[in-house]
Length: 411
Image (cartoon, rainbow, N blue to C red; front, top):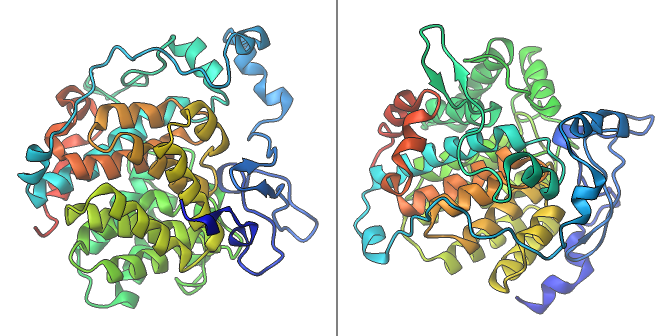
């Protein structure tokens, strides 16, 4: 890792604004002016204690489910769980070389949605210990949450991450001749989603809903997002830009950044969207992992140096075998830069194994559905649709509709 990433200056964008390292879309105390007031980062790779989305009283339901402080004491901070019973699916270099663009598009869209659905039930479980105690020593190894339709069919439901990503993808498929026209169509889609989302509301973030309200009030699409909105609400839906503009990386980056402004205008959100779109486009071009992640860092740095540095630290830790229990405890993913760094960390660890990557994102404290969404999109695109377990694909909510949508992306 370059020496400059050890310099504290890279964690500053030149302003005195504190780090937006906070729970889902701003569920933290604000000062009297309504600004976020989270704790800052103390040093590279060492975050100040930012707390959790819950008060002590709100954490008490975990106690009722059998989670105890004694259970946490049984885990060493650097100890990883034993090998999972689910077989990894290693995709060989020859298999990757033969992938078609459509197989990669399908892998990205369905991989992201599978990660979202699999991480859905673990999203607000606040430690590895509680995940393992609830789901066993290996953690989640498949879908744990199912809903039933009126006709008796059951499916694994995804969250607002996939709902909004679908709107982004559908909008882009309608035409990309003009940025302003496309973003206004996307704004209308977001407004309609906020009022009556397909499948019902799935705990959408406050910043996303606030942006939609402002859009509905007639605020310009590039001013509707909160200037200090730095949650992961826009990066979780940024991957379609890399698929649509796979042959034009600069356009993928620019449009992804601009789209973030519909709901999130903080530099950490813009930088995270840039990194995700660039990474997806380069994966679609079948670039190697080292090149992909280095270009993701570079893309993030064009908008926010501290986001680029956070991604670079995550890459360094993945390359040096730092345990997920260390990295993914620090990178909870509520803030955009944490989410993209966590996704890149998992991608670097398991670039040819979609099963292990998605499960690693799922079994994390914090915003696990968003982390698994990002990891699922990155690794799913690299490994293709056939790298995903057929049973996971079949049980996913609206799997046929999502596959049909992915097939519309130009090859």
